[in-house]
Image (cartoon, rainbow, N blue to C red; front, side, top):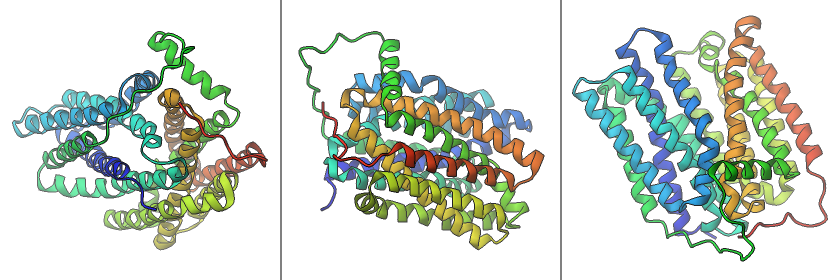
Length: 405
């Protein structure tokens, strides 16, 4: 049975926004490099982006639970469209500067956190519970492919034509996403139980979401596993371009081809995640995906073949989609609607911390022990997470409950 028209609109809006993300993230460092020769200032773009996301992720989760999610989706994308449109005008007029780039990426980073959280929280309102796995598979694949594998090479190509062009195109796609989200049905007002407590402060609401995640015997440990897998992902991927040049001996074009081939794993994952989960359950799908992540990282540590590396990266991307689909669907099934934004945010915080730690760890391990070691360390972490997932999921006599409200 096809997914609903409203979900397809959400998917298209997400894909357009993700493509803009990919364009922007490759273009801004390239633009910065034309404005300064200081590598620290160029790298500062990533630092600013990561820092603002870490600072706002929890309170924004509370706002996602307070505000209309459809409004959040269209407004955040139109804000990004206006911000990048303004940046394009400044660049064309010759007023581009490093502080302007920092301001742009900080603003985009803040509203991106809100857009991503709202997009995930609204899915259960657009599809039935039995279709959550399939819907999340489509979203994960689109995000992975547009954000990480189509957007960056396209951004580099557009930058070669004109410095401001990738920013202008990203602005246009954000505008398209905002208009698509405007076409979504209005979010129904949530019921107000008679015993529902009065709304507290933003900080109190934020902490309530964190406590709910920590107190959940399934989702809490899964969030910790997610933080560890973020370390395991980022440690090798932080040095992937160096690994490709020094170990695989490929040109920048060859590196782009490897990434393009590996994106096929995301497409496959979006198609098989739902039927695999339906056949073998969450326990074995999650554990199996983590084992696949371990195997792919171990293989990358030992190969010098570009084609084998492409296949192994595709296997890793397949793992990432399977994992993401299952965890997202579980949160959507088990968390009450009025808490989804905050629980999503608490989980996201652990993932962001893991990415930051993994990036630093990958650089240190590669510099001290060699380029293969971050991949081996990643394989060990994934293996440990697979064992933890098997222990976490006990055979159940009843199906997992579905949250309502």
